[in-house]
Structures are given as C-alpha cells and as structure tokens.
Length: 271
Image 1 (tube, rainbow, N blue to C red):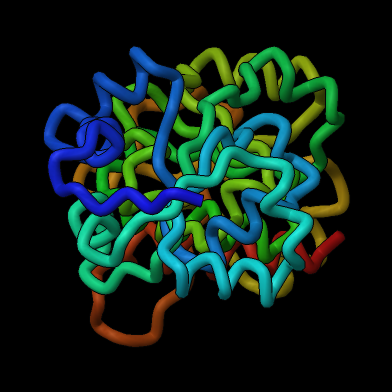
Image 2: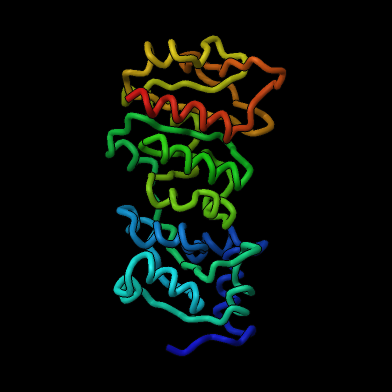
C-alpha cells in the first residue's frame, strides 16, 4: 500500500476542513465528521449502531494499523478504504495533541426525532442548549454507561460531531442513539403523548433527588431534562417535575456533566 507522506496532500486538507474553525459548516455540507484514537475508532468499527454513523475511510500510520489489527484482526481492515500515512501527515491531520495514528472519516446519518418513539424508550436524557464540547461528550458517555435508551440535545447546543465532543464520548456515540436539534416544548409534548414522565434538574426543585424519590417514583418511563451550563433551564410547563440534587457542602450548584452522572446512574439502576 502506498504511503501518503506529503504535507501538501489533499487528504490533510479534507480532514482539517472537518475539524477546523469552519468545521461545523463543512461537516453539515459533507455529512461527514472525524473520529480519532484507538478506542473511539474501535467502537465505530464494531458497534451495532455503526450503520448510522458509518466509517467511510481510515487514515492509519503503521503503528496505528498494528494497534487496530491487534485489537480487531486484520480482516476488519479489508472492509474499509484504508489510507496509510506517515507520522508527520498524521500529526498534521489530528486534532489531539498526542495522536495515536488512527483517524476515521465517518458519515453523520443520525436518527431523527420521530425515530425516537419507535424504539419505545424507557429512559431518555435531554440537554437544553449545552455549550461545552467536553460536557456534551461526557453526558453521552454517562447515559450510555447508565443504560439509557437515548440522548437528545436541543437546538443551539454544541455540535455533537465537534472533534472534542466525539473524543469525550470515548466511543459511546456508537452505542446509544443521539438526536439533535430537538425543540424543548415539542419534546415535552411528545413525551406526555407517549406516557413518559418528564423531570427537570433544578437547584430550587420541589423534589429532592434521593434514594426515596428514586425508589418510589421511577417505575415508569421517564425523561430527564438538564439545563444550560450558565443559564439553567427555560420556563417549563407546570406538569414537569422539578428535582434538585441534595448537597451538604457550600457549592451552589454542580457542573452539568457531574449532575447528569449522578442522576443518570441512579435512574438507570432503578430499572
């Protein structure tokens, strides 16, 4: 296989266009995004959901190729277009500071909001205007670990295909349905129509999220709404139950990713 060694290669230009300052626009135009690193790409290649976020091409250094073959076997690479690149080319392409020699070019064929109800979800996590790429990736990973059925993001949230978000999911993007651009009032209305109770995390919520609440409340399908890192939540209908996480210390609030980890884990284990 011929190795790409030129730092003027159009392959570098293509990848950088998807992760650079105009990356979001280019990702939308091309319906493509970049996944990087052994663990993330391994999940992209082997997940049952890979058909939704399909790998279209692999860029590998010799060491990166060896890592994938060691993990998955040589036959896995026969199923994809593989382009071998030098370490210098990989460094020019990669978004991370310490590239592992593995980059996948993937399609953004995600599920739509109307597809959600076809899977009859029992546990849904919804995030309103979450802005930080690392937080977005972390909550996807937490929802996956907790056994949730789907993660939804509102309009004006960070692009889930931002390279930092993709990296922060550590492969969970390929384990759990992630649906974006879901307007909050539409979601709450549809949840009620499908008999899914909606709870919103609020520091001044009327209910305490404690073991008693979990044990007595969560035997039915539920959706959990988390607000913006700085502004919290918008006005919500009165039938949405506002819930607060009890805190013994002096902190006024929790980071959205920390709050989500606490809630999603407890809710997931309640099933």
